[in-house]
Amino acid sequence: ETGVTQTPRHLVMGMTNKKSLKCEQHLGHNAMYWYKQSAKKPLELMFVYSLEERVENNSVPSRFSPECPNSSHLFLHLHTLQPEDSALYLCASSRVLGANTEAFFGQGTRLTVV
Amino acid sequence: AQKITQTQPGMFVQEKEAVTLDCTYDTSDQSYGLFWYKQPSSGEMIFLIYQGSYDEQNATEGRYSLNFQKARKSANLVISASQLGDSAMYFCAMREANNAGNMLTFGGGTRLMVKP
Image (tube, rainbow over all chains, first blue to last red; front, side):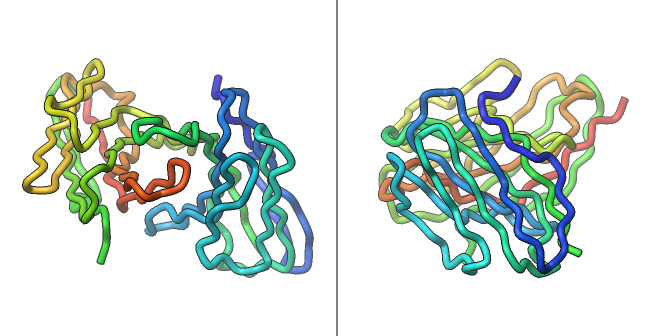
């Protein structure tokens, strides 16, 4: 059983909808991440929270809005998405310090925008 | 320029044989970490093995070993005695020293298919 849980596993939404992706980690980590995995493209880092503060935002469109209320939970709020936003969204967590600390991933949310 | 390059989009291997998945990287940092992840069809990224830039020995984890050649900037994954359950996407990733947290840059992945 994974220490990082993502819900929902699958989501279909219209371009005018508002939805949220949820990620929860039970590993005692203090850094959390959102990655986007599109077909035929490498994983792209979207957001990083370290000690509950956002430390990285890789030029992600404002229709994606992250929220990290505490070190165990991470949300990705979605609104007015485009069909090209359809992808697998992966959440990960890790310890903040230490180059050798691996990131643990959830199973992802498969998002389809129609 | 890509920081992580995986030149093999797909590979076949016979069950019980060994296979090497290639990974080259580009960084100007002296301190960095290299990771390999497995992604089965379920979508989850599963950590396999880690190699630090200052580690003198190649990392090994069970049937996985990492052939680290620092001068060539390569970090190939070797899977010994392939099993049908090894069929999946495999991603090489790098963490550079000045990254906050543990931000990873991923390669494009290699799809491994194990034949019975």
